Amino acid sequence: MMKKQFQIKEPCKQLWDEMQNVEDGKFCDLCEKKVWDFDNLPETEIDKILKSNDSVCGKTSFLKPAFSSVFLALTLTSAIYTNAQKGKDSAIENVYQKNITINGKLVSLENRKLVSGDISLVTLEKLYRAKADENGNFTLTFPEKVLTEHNIIRIDYTIIDLNNKEFTDFKSSILKTNELLGKQNFEIEEKYFTIGGLLITDLQPPDYYFLDGKKIGKRKFEKIQKEHPEYTYLAFYDEVTVQKLAKRSYIDNLYLLYSN
Image (cartoon, rainbow, N blue to C red; front, top):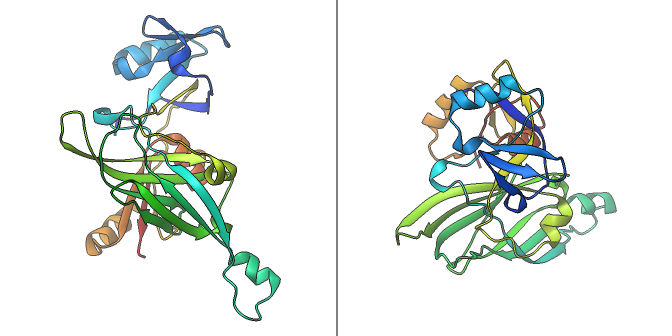
């Protein structure tokens, strides 16, 4: 991937589509400043902007250009708590064995046909995955103890695109626990990009590689991946998801392998 010249340190919650159009970007009424659209500018132009301005706000997308406007999520129709209890186990043990089951649906605002879809709650140590049926319905179960302040949800999917061809991709999103258990009607066609003030970096942050939650080197990772094609492989590139999942602030890309 191209070497990063900047990072968005604190993503902004303002809505890009509601901002006023200006040349090469938008104007934010809240901050009273221009927000540059770096998706449509060449690298040389971005470099000039960064060098000639002390404070820059920008917007950048993290998905592959072929489908950069897709933001996949899930509809949670119910969240059911179930205790996995064993006879005379103590109350403390029962708390740690509590499971959460989410019955939900992958949906499309533009009524694109879902060919197949998997949804996963991602942790460094383990994947909790569920397969959706032909209507997008799924049942996802995971231990309550794996929930954190920022939960990473990933959807791998194949749909019929506007050209009546199959299109396969993935999308990850970050949900707080109350959002994961309570929100509904998360449609797949929302735009996914980040807006915020830029932090210029002189050095390239490192990539990180994990096997079942254990950090390993790149060569070892690639060797294990080659020797075990049955292992589940995931890669994350957008800095917000990567930092929340790896719990590291200085990181570029994150690569994960799961043996089970």
